Length: 482
Image (cartoon, rainbow, N blue to C red; front, side):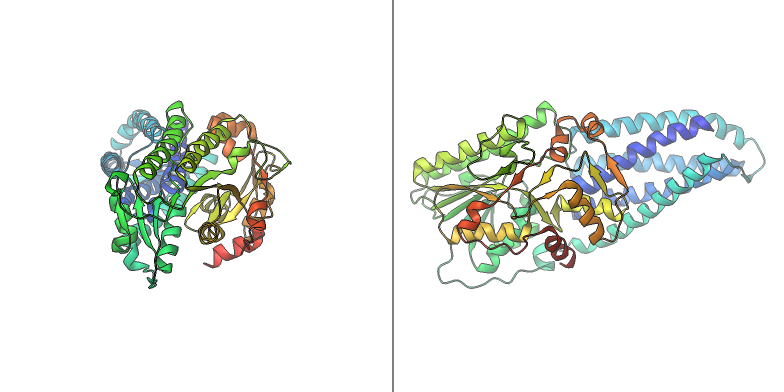
């Protein structure tokens, strides 16, 4: 059985990574109503795997039981094929996930080929479940079986919750719409994302008018309903419409897959192209907007070690810095139209519904809190609540063209961040991921986790902005209590 267990171990590792990285961290399937059927397939498959793992760890399936085992494997195969079809219909799979699925399909074929002769021999014997032990293999697959079975139950619970989530978000979590005598009109790109959603809800509460530009019309309507105007192209905005402020948050997420040449190009295209479209909109609007708040990132400064970075600090020449520099250049072109442009260099945003907090917290809850690399790299962060407040503050104060670091005053080292997060969840920090391993696996994307900047919000503080969460302990407490 050694060959069977070795091949199956590859399946466990690949499948576990796919489940955690793509299904949980990147796609957040348990929170997506559109993923209900996909998640149901996952639950069935995981429950079957739980039975198979434990069954193979301690028993030989003789006679009719061999046919039962073959039946379970056949059902698992059918469920997987249906799952692939559902995934293709309901979401756009990144290239890395497609490659992983291909490897999983090839490996399960190898598993069937290795197991088949043994199951055939079992089928010829008298029907009974014969107790056996394979030493460490048996105990390992008992743990695997228990883990995957629990995960299957967890996914089944998520499916039941998703049936409730079919009710649109704007109805389940309504936002009271204030009445404003002279409401302002905001155009927001990237309005359905982690930051954008919170910002739109805050503006609804203030009684302002909101136009959301999105590629996913259904998602925007699900989130905001009739409370906002949703458009798929800026051409839908008339030359005579009055827009007071544009907030540009659009851009393909940097996490979620390896940084291939194609993905790197999409990082540029998704940011540069939409900013150029905003410029063309500004050109044709009869009444120009007063302000563009353009999202950038502290990656602008590059990997700078312990150097304290202010708004006037020079950039570097690495990929992230180049991306931010070119994005800001495009944004500043709107100044030619008489529009104030505030470039907001945003740090690591902490919130319960997205950003880096979710994967790190999930890892800690599963006793997998991990220090990355040396742990000495700086993490300049900001709570989602403070970021939204800062954006509204900039608009309300009519800030003139400038650059502002959107980070809390007290950056922390990565090791401190992980230890305090784990402590707030009453979990230990047991692991450390060496930097060379992360770079080998993630290649250039490892920069997100291993590089750091100690960024100070000097401009925001000089303007009089007061942070609700100045230190990381306050932020974690607020998030976990929300």
